[in-house]
Image (cartoon, rainbow, N blue to C red; front, side, top):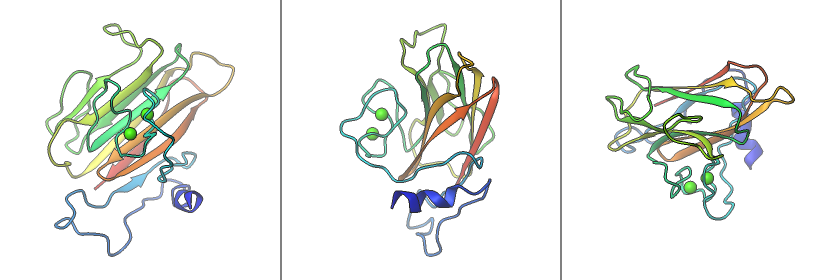
Length: 194
Ligand SMILES: [Ca+2]
Ligand SMILES: [Ca+2]
């Protein structure tokens, strides 16, 4: 089942709208979400419960829709998170909201997107919990396109590709993928539209 769900996302930069007959905006305040991702990014939409939520791994371990809840990071009905193990690496998560505003650490965009974690950070040690997190503070999900950029500023080690876990939640659906970065400043961009 997981493989079948994954396959539609493998094609290069294809757009994936909801199936015909999906609930209309009036009956479903979240609406359908279409996703675009680079060809090499295999987005998983099937969630397999792995027990209690594990902190700072950017995975919805208990499949309740929230990513890393109960870990001191904020969650919301829109949430984007990344995590990586190599402490020497520096990875950035930037989200452009439907109004074109880019999220910033400890600030809230006009539509209500906030970023509450950045690593590495001068102001707050990450203590090996290398994550970045963007979430909708409150209210209804703003419609439009969320453009999500993940950039590896520093790979930390040239020995092998840097592995970064990425998860996204928009409304009632959560996506997840492992991103591999092979050169510094490589950027992967995904978009979620509703
Ligand atoms: Ca969870
Ligand atoms: Ca988790």
